[in-house]
Structure formats: structure tokens, C-alpha cells
Amino acid sequence: MTTSAERGAAGQAAHAAPADQVVAGLERLIRQEIPAARTIRLTGLARAAGGLSRENWSLDASWTDANGPHEHRLMLMRDAAGTLLNTERAREFAVLKALEGSAVPAPRVHWMDPRGAFLGAPSVVMERMPGACDYMVLNGGRPLEERLTLARRFIELMAAIHAVDWRARGLERSLGLPEGSPAQAELGHWEGEYRRVRLEPHPELDLVLSWLQRSAPRAEALVLVHGDFKPGNALIEGLSITAKLDWETAHLGDPLEDLGWVTNPVRKREHQIAGHWERRQIIDAYRELTGRAVQERDLIWWNVLACWKLAVIQLTAVNEFVAGRYSRVFQTPAWLYRPMFQMMEAA
Amino acid sequence: MRPTVEEQLLGTCRILEDVVAPCVADPFARTILDGLVANLRMLNGAIPAVAGFLRHDNQATVDLLRSLAPALPAALAGRIAEAAAEPEPDAVDGAALDRRNLQLRGLLAEAVGLEGLAADAGAKIVRHMTERASRVPMRYVPTAPAAHHTPPDQPQKP
Image (cartoon, rainbow over all chains, first blue to last red; front, top):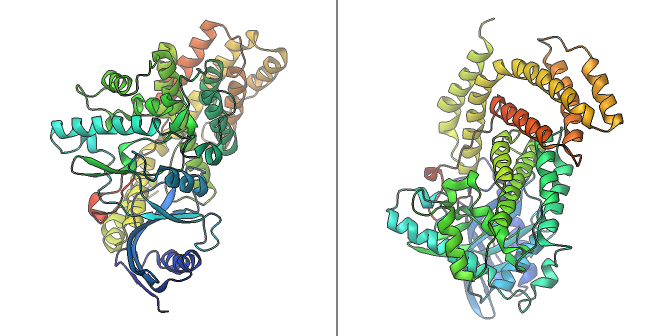
């Protein structure tokens, strides 16, 4: 058996050690998963520039086994030393496995290294799908008609995710059912994160937390929730969404959670097209696609939670930076306070 | 003192951009470098404002806590009275100003978490917090990964 690791020029110098670790670890993982594999070749390794929570490595793999030669374009997602989101690779792996053959476009997942035994940190390896990631695609350089088509495709994709038969696909076992109402369960999770990561008092966030606790809504349905639904977590080719990515925050919950994330006023530039595809159009489209009622007061609660969750994620970054584990500098999320107060007032 | 803090921060940005950045080929490292330079520029504008911000906020928070105290449980009201009676730190002692701010905001965090605050007290708290948020001198500078640093078929996530 021979192995070669031909790394891409970009990234070779600055990330020699992590790149070596990825190549050697992935080769051992492939040997473990496919004992008959011979002539394993891992080429074109490069780390993507984006990704705030994980290392994203692209590479091409080939090997030969009893069935003949195999070639795959792969993405390897590996936990970074410092992260904004504490998530489990096993959760992402289970969701991607469950989505195979569904109406939701998602990468085919190959292997998992849940404890980092091979790759040094928990990792999943999946097919690299065609398409490009553009988190500002709805307000980029494309003609308005194309952007509106894509905006419509995004909400159709959300509806498709929410329509997944999670019972039939065994997701109850891997994701678990929320304890209490989905709103309370989600708030409880993020409150735990808040108490874990904060380095100083944040009375603004405590005030909003009290409001969220007092007014948590009941769910109209229990669905598969993506948990970080945004254009930046999708691959686009032409006018098609070829894959929804980043399923590590997926869970069973209230459909308004994803809808609240995309109608969150502080992220309008990612999710809305001024004058054409705004909150009202998004809600109407979702209602039409799903038949759900979508109570405005309940959606505002999820909008506020979306902001509060963003604030906690920023505090996580602050904590990780101060601890020396994170390479980007974040600040106290003061910019989120006024929008949250305004929404609480309007609810 | 020359070079001043401002001159040193801006000079560091210039060197990182003109000398270091052109040699950084790795897209991830380049994105990190861009973010660090943006943060240094933000700090250059923010540092002179930090002490003044803390002095103002400490006074405003003491005033707010005093006004809330009559409606709060006796134990918390007592600790607020003790804190409010303490002398304010030296105006140029940044560390002491920061400690004082933590102390006062800790008390405010306790107060806002209590149930049953009157509506006018709630409005006063929100007004205080909104004004404070508008004055915070240090702010996150978003720097998305530049497309030209990333091979076209790679996912690029903010």
C-alpha cells in the first residue's frame, strides 16, 4: 500500500502541522472504515478561509478495493481548538445519515471520528458538493429576479426540512425529544451556555432572559429544526441550492425557531431583500408552504431568542479568545441590546 | 511621548498590511490577519474613550440602583447602599474604574432578574441600558473572508 499527501499550495506553510495531522489521520480513518482499501491517495488539501466554529478542509481522496477504484471529493469538518459553538459531531453525522434519500439536499456523509482518535479532534468527513457558498447572496451582485428566486428557494428548503418525517428516519433516537416545550428546552440550553461562558455581569442579557423565561410560547408542531439556517450555510449553483450544510445544531423543536432566525431584524442583510422579500413576505411564504398559522407574538419571542443566542455566541468567542483558544477578537454584544428591547416592547 | 499610543497602533497596522499580509498566502491565516488589523484600528479609536465611558457609566449605574433600591428586597437594597457609599476610583485608574463597573453591574444584574418590578422601573432600566449600549467604545469589527482568498469551489462561511 502506498500513500501520498499532496497538499495544495495555499495553506501549506502556515498550517503544516494541522495539515499533516489531517492527512495522516484521515488515511488511518479510511483504513479503519475500509480495511480492503489499497493505494490510498489524499490530494489537494486546503483549509477554507471561513468557518467560525470548525476547521473546514477540502481534499480529494482515491483508493482501490475489491470493487475497483474509488474517487471522492471530500470535505472534512474538524473541531477547532477554540469554537463558538459546542456541538457534537455525532449529532451532525446522525442527521446527515438520516437525510440521505430525503427531499433535503445535504452532503452524503462518509465517516466520523467522534472523539478525535484519528484526527486529533472530533471530525466528520462528507462528500464535497458542487456549488459555492455566499452568505450575502440575497444582497449581492445578482439581478433582483435571481435573488428573489433564491430567496424563495431558501424558504422552500426550510419548509422541506420541517417536513422531514423525523420519526420514520429515526431522528428521535439520535437527537432526543425536547424536555418540556421546545421554547423552554432551547432557552434552557442557551441559558446554560450563557452561565458557562460569561466573564462578567451582563444585566442587559439577564433582563432579556427574564422576559424570555416569562413568555415562552407553546409549539404548533415538533419538527426537525436546522438551528442555523442562513444562506452562508448552503451551497448554490446557478439558481439551485445544491446542499444545506452545517447540521451540527440540528434538533427537534419548534418550526418558528428557524423562521425566527431568518426574520431576526439584526440579520436583515443576509436573509431579506429590502422592498421585495421582507418579514411579511417570508412569513406569508412559509404559511403558504406549510399551512402553519405562525402567531406574530410567538415569532417575536423566537426573534428575541435569536438575538439572545447570538449574544451568547459572541460571549463564547470572548471567553475562548481570553482563554487563548480562539484567533478572532469579539466584543461584548452591545449592538444587540436595543433591537431586543424594541422587540420585547412590541410583543 | 512619541510615538504616541495612536501612532504605534496605526503604525503596527501599516506594517502588518504592507509587510506581513503580502507574504501570507494561506486563506485562513489571511482572514485572521485582516480581522486583527481591523480590531487594532477599532482599538485606536476606542482606547481614549474607555476611561470616560467607565466614569460616566459608574455614575449612571449608581443613580439607577439608588432609584430602584426602595422596590428591591432589603438585603439587595442594603448592598446597593453600601456600594453607592463607596468613593469613586481615581479618574485615571483604569483598572479601578473597571472593578467598580463590574461591582455595580453585578448588582444591577441581580436587580433586573427579580420579578415584580414596576413598569416605570422597567422603563428606566431599559433607558439606562439602551443609552449605555450606544456609548460602549469597543465594538466588534466584522471582516468576512474575502472571496479572492478562497478557491472557488470551497465553502466560504462567515
